[in-house]
Amino acid sequence: MAFDQHGRTVDYLRISVTDRCNLRCRYCMPEEGVPAKQHGGILSLEEIYRFVRVAAGEGFKRIRLTGGEPLVRLGIEDLVAQLHEIPQIESIAMTTNGILLPKMAAKLREAGLSRVNISLDTLDPEQYHYITRWGNIQDVFNGIDVALELGFNPVKVNAVVVRSLNQDLLAFARMSIDRPLHVRFIEYMPVGDNCGSEGLGWTPEDTIPNEELIALINQKAEESGLGSLEPIIKRNETPDGWGPARYYHFKGAAGTVGFISALSRHFCAECNRLRLTVDGELLPCLFSDRFFDVKTALRSGSDEAVRQILLEALSSKPDEHHHKVGTEHYMNQIGG
Image (cartoon, rainbow, N blue to C red):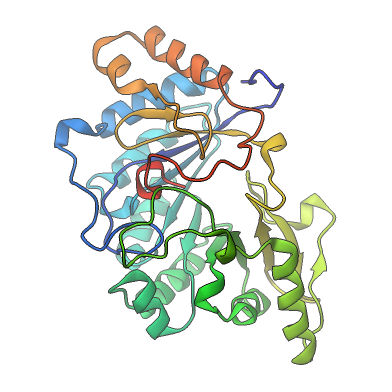
């Protein structure tokens, strides 16, 4: 098992396989996108596989593929299949906007992908089009349906909550009642710059702390006769996962409602992950501007050189993010 200098078990890798995306969400990317990296500037699928193989030898056993939008990366099904063959890797997950899932999900499932998180910040078609700048929400609904039909488990819906958007939070929570969907609300965080003048530039006022969010949802749920969310205490009653969400459910619901509070009630003491960017930088913390150059080691060094970079990053994980505001990376480069 891998441990950092603070005694935390670190066995989870989040890997951004591309910085490209088929959407332009306002809090993530500027409308024109980000400057395209040259082909040689990003890790090849073979290099990603090699890095994971080395990391697996050090105790990493859970992988999440992210982007950008990972489903726009050519050969993504082949990468999943290769990672699935590494003996130490227990599970492979993906975070996606869901738009391409209907045509790709079956091959991904066959290749060894078992879990999907689908990013969706509103249930209103017009608001979705506004947030994403050009997306069609029905494509995402189709992706959710396919993921459930194919037996991905768990299927999670991730919603970033932004106060100025005035999202229908109860409608999201209701998604967990009739189907085994696990809806997670994520606090809006200060990652990257303002994403352009037309973006949703982060301000503290736009972040709704989770305790306030739970109270808002419960108020509306009680007014509608649904009753309040009940906390889930037993670990075996929450969706299997590797993250920091606190889970609740409505009585009798098939799914759950989770809350991820990176700012108001940070979970740094339980942090179990490292992040690999699309251009081969290993980040010890989401809010960190310190990175470790894996790409050079992969291209000019032995597996032992890659291993030493990994161990150096692991030993450099901070005790917490100390409420740092902003980073040098866009979210699409880090992978969340």
